[in-house]
Image (tube, rainbow, N blue to C red; front, top):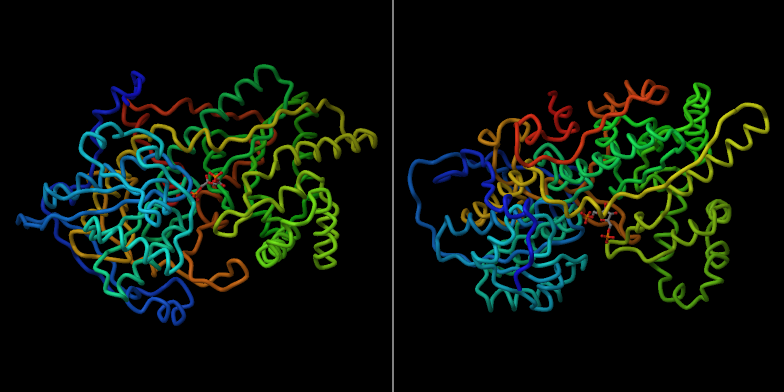
Length: 550
Ligand code: FBP
């Protein structure tokens, strides 16, 4: 069924993503040195005997046309939506057609479960054209099923064989790419004849390292959030009566909050990684925000903005210890916990936890305590997006200020509005950066298929330069791995990138935040622009620019 399209969607459909010159015509591949995992080399090597230590590969423009046999490729969108996913698929499609025009692309429906349940559709040129440069993952849908057991891998192989699929591309975050690598290793070990490749996706921005400079979707999502935070700042600077507590998605890492802070210059922004490094308690954090409020009140400014990263609770060391014990406990007592009556769950946890953690748990407001025990995602993570930290902090700051008022330490008015921005940004029409970057990631993945690679992630680098100068190639996924505790067991996983407190983005923020706290230095970035001057339309994130010394 054809849907009604907006004027922007119609105009945007014909946008031709910019690409590196190396992908434009015939491509040659250069292999670098053999690689090592990020840590725990011996363990990772023994777990991935077929895919460990492979070289980084880089694509260069070639001058001879090579004939590739036709290839059938499967694609899966895994995990949370991120702007640009459709362009990754369009890039894969165009890339495999460039290898051989009779190549075919199959999409597995609703994430990894589509592979296991043999739920798929062929993605034809007509379908792909409907989705070029659009946001969302709705072309085939996404899901969070964890692809991890031999049984699932074997079931997947049945449909891959039936469709004569020689390569499977998994578009996902750190956990999904870890699983892509486990699958690549398994198929290589049993000589299944199926390559498995990954593409770095997540608005959270935490799948990055020396070879993956950004995960796609981060750029667009941050720009959408910055637009609305800017609008709120202008509203609050107009009415001058509210403090806005704004929680931003991003799971554990504070990359989104930091990028938005750099873009909008709020009065206060929490960086979870700093909270942890300074060993701050919840009360320290509340006191710090209350001080900023009191300071502005002294100048008659009873308004402001506070940005809160989604995962901050986990970074308060005492809370982190509590959550680690809770994660392990709930992983091993899942059934027992489900049988406990709703009204008794809190007391049950208080009784079962260690003394120290039990006391902290008991001190939490009822709603937060309950949220900490809610269902984990399939990777065992607490669903931090369900914890209403914006309300918790607004309430606690209010209590603190009332206390200071009684003590004569604060004179002012404190009224709050709370917001959570997350889902609003995940399916936005990709910015030019994401539209271009995603298309190149997909096209590069197709190149890796052509060169017979498995266990690699598509990598496009140097993206603060003009697209023609971007560097495309592949990075062995094992190179990004280390051993970490998951569900109470040590597992090989891709190392998550948290905000680096010595990095330029944080240092830039830290140098300016004292002034932003007192003065009203708001910046109003406005909406993403798709057409117009390059300095308005094609700018990467401030985070990426600063990381690259620009
Ligand atoms: P991914 O890591 O899968 O890309 O998910 C990103 C994210 O948007 C997080 O920022 C957020 O915590 C989570 O997904 C929310 O998950 P869900 O969509 O299942 O509610």
